[in-house]
Amino acid sequence: MAEQKFEARAVQKHLRKSPRKVRLVVDIVRGEKVNRALKKLEFINKATAPDVAKVIKSAAANIRDKFQEERLENEDLYIKEIYVDEGATLKRIQPAPMGRAHPINKRSCHITVVVAKKEEELV
Image 1: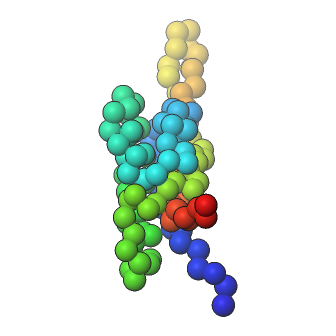
Image 2: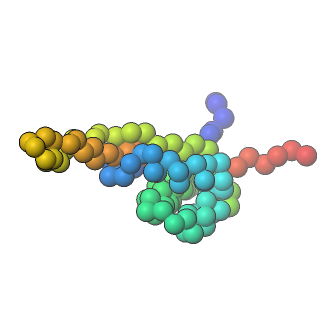
């Protein structure tokens, strides 16, 4: 039988925030341990920080649920992958002078987090 991979994922779809702005927050916590990433997100002064923290907590809960026989704590888990994809764009128009119209793009994004168990290094 193949080795068991201790990893789980969580996805937040159609978040009504610009992917460019969410990527600023996601880049800060990429590769961190889960508890350290959540602590960093508490102190980041960006509107998307709570949304990113929510997805990370969901991924950590998913791995605990998936492997209930293992005792997995946040100290044992790290963020293996985290990325932001562009979602659907709502296209609106703003009336402008002289009968013109300016376009307004209301962007959305999808956040994907993959959490895995930290393997012990052999010294």
